[in-house]
Amino acid sequence: MPGVRLAWEGKKAEVPRLRLPLQVVETVNASRADRGTLSCDRDPDDGWRNKLIWGDNLHVLASLAVELVGQVDLIYIDPPFDSRQDYKIRITVGDGGDAANQDLAKLSSVLEEKAYRDTWGKRVESYLQMLYERLVLLRELLSDRGSLFLHLAPNVSHLARGLLDEVFTPDNFRAEIIWKRTTAHADANCLGSVHENILWFSKTEKVIWNQQYTPYEDWYVKQYYRYKDIDGRRFMSGDLSAAGLAGGGYDYEWKGVNRMWRVPRDTMVKLDQQSRVFYTKNGIPRIKRYLDEAKGQPLSDVWSDINPVVSWAPEKLGYDTQKPEALLERIIKSSSDEDSIVLDCFVGSGTTAAVAEKLKRRWVAVDIGRFAIHTTRKRLLDIRQCAPFVVANLGRYERQAWQDATTGPQVKAYLDFVVQLYGASPTEEFQHLHGTKGRRVAHVGAIDAAVSFAEIKEALDEAAAAGYPGLDVLGWEFEMGLHELVQDEARACGVDLRLRRIPREVMDARAVDSGEVVFHELAYLGVATTVRKRNLTVTLTDFMLPNPDLVPASVRSKISDWVDYVDYWAVDFTYGTGGHGDTFHPQWHSYRTRVDRKLERTATYDYEEPGSHTVRVKAVDIFGNDTTTAVEVSVT
Image (cartoon, rainbow, N blue to C red; front, side, top):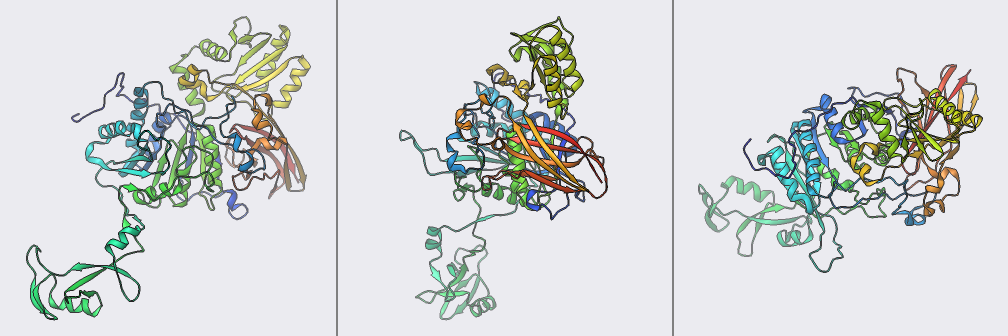
């Protein structure tokens, strides 16, 4: 293909296309802002549901092609800037406000969830390869009227422009927007860096464009609109003379002035009757051009009127590089229509999804960070009449693809990899035990199934028979409600049992190489239920982190009660019914926001008919990790 291309060592033009099925794990039909006013069972008329997806966006984008190829009108992405650092999330603990928790801004705990990893390798080539692969897939999702806005810092925007020229062609370049994000800079030895770049490309020339306007600046108004009508309207005077006008004009005398005019006499009469003619001191007529203050100036490619999200702003959610809603509002309004699909696959704190929702666009939001998904969900739940949306991931399909690409189909290779990553030594002398770590043994759960009670029981019996005092069970997922049951079994066997989740970071070679993979022990979630005829009350009674010693002292000092560790909890009172399968349908939720730190501990629900029900409860801690449990209830 002709044209200029950006080349780098090891560039791969072939883009991976693992089209894996999306697994819907949660369906949200009503926000907290609408509690009691909207049905939790409402469905959109056209069958579309907005999507919040947790996973590697490379695989997610390929999977979305099945449904969305050629249908997305606007893509905004704000990927990591290759700045060689890891941005952290600021968290707040308990009921206290930000002022009491500002010292938690830069946690170094192993429990800390990074907002996103801004280290794509030591060479810029790995960063460019990451970006190139995603741009190819994103272009395929765009409609013929679609646009892509790529937001980057100046240190990589020049390289990204070359990639966009290659993927979209130079003919589809629309603008390079300069966003002046701040006026402050601390480096006195060079020019202050106060702007970022937003590169705008379209898929074709038939691009959606809704002209936007910015308020007139004072200097512009004073310089060009110096005159005022008696009604106060500002205007500039435009020439009515035809001098230099191509094609000539109209020759006649007007109030003592004889010359060639731009308009015929009858038009001049109408303008004069409408008080649209302004006369200079010399009696020369000039036309009034009024300042359209309602619209303002047509938008240019330099945006200096949108401020960054300051630390005290209500929309601030704790992300170092969070973008202001005003910035996304301008982009979404200008390059999409109501009901257009808007996509962001580096969604971070959820600004794109939240603004798209408020502007009545459909949206797809993707991020690899668990905390980003949690933050975005809470942000959406605070929007009144938020349209239904689903939370999805690639689940076991992504893990299976990772296994095929790394350890291969041999189960032993997979087991040994996880065991060694956990810091244990592989063993072959047992049937259900896969590694040893001092006086403890380890069992690794299957890649495509939740660890079951029976599976843990077999490992416990084998560990006890071999004389090991401790057992660590490592699993991607665990069956609900088994925490206390298996602990009772472990105590009966005389074995210290610890259940640890295999983190998604296991599938990230960069995280593995850097030694950042941590197997967190499962938290314990306690709930109590009270039934009065058909009314059910669910009370949150306990939440326990099994290893609080791993929590930094700066956080522990803020904890006054176990509930301070809980950031969000929700209840599905009719789990598994109505054809929902194993999808969680939160019918009630309570969570902490920056403005409202209180967490309700009791949820109630009225059943329409008597019967037995499974009630599923989900809690998310302040680090973004979720814990679920289920209880059975009967109403009469």
